[in-house]
Image (cartoon, rainbow, N blue to C red):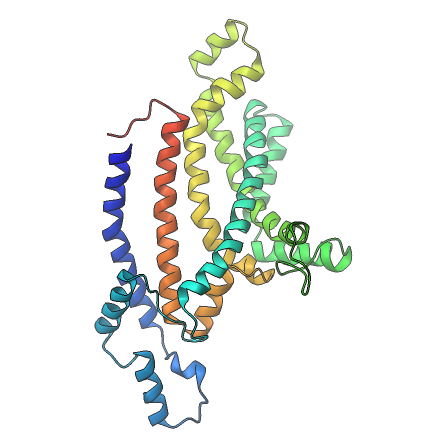
Amino acid sequence: MVPYIVRRLLIALPVLLGITIINFIIINLAPGNPVDMYIDPNTSPELKEAKKEMLGLNSPAIVQYGKWMLNLLQGNLGYSFSSFAPVSDLITERIGPTLLLAFTALLIGLIIAIPAGIYSAVKHNTKVDYILTGLSFVGTSMPQFFLGLGVIYLFSLKLGLLPSGGMGVLGGDGGFLDTLLHLVLPAGVLAVGIVGKKIRYVRASMLDVLNQDYLRTARAKGVGEFMVTHRHALRNALLPIITVFGMEIPLLLGGSIVIEQIFQWPGIGQLTMQSILSRDYPTLMALNLVAAVIVLVTNLLTDVVYSVADPRVKYN
């Protein structure tokens, strides 16, 4: 396993390099200039040029990329154009809330989607199966921004049960209960999309296994249906399920941009939107790099979990 992980990491290095190049090209193809966002439009051309020189924007694109890469190799992600704070500090402050939101939503999705998918497969072609499948289509089709605004209107404005946004009450102690109450709505909205998509994956994976000969043999030997379903069938259906849930982690971190904006959650998604609107190139480059690393690490962890879930899976 260790040699396999080392090989995967070595393969990932040129992939990350290519991603940084593509990101740099795309970011610099955007119309306009970051300097126009931070100074008075009536400022003299000389002062604008001085500002560009200070930010390093007067250099050719290849030189700008070379300087950024050199700083990256030294562990320096640069400084934000808008706040002039170290980009590494900005990301460190925001990554925790985003991970909390994403993994809470993923945990809720696991707890609901796997049992529901199993039950739908066991009761396939019955009313229960049709109801669960219909609900999964609704969850998949529901736009997150629409659902987010809807739950804010219902639970915050009308019922007053939950806070409408933020990660804590202003001036509060920021305790566990306060954070939990603010987490319910955004995590719940993200979880709806996960459950909607994953119920069908779990159902399909279980249906492929439930009619296998070894399960009929187990039933013929008198093994209870619960043991047949949850011990034998589920274990052999796990690999596709692990795949789709592993793919969900990067999607959650990327898709949380909309949810973090709606609920004013102080995470990476909100920082990404702010950086786009202010054309904060160093922060955008760093955020894209972090997203790429998360995708690669998630794929690697998924492979490791494969071997744990099914000992027959070997990596040479």
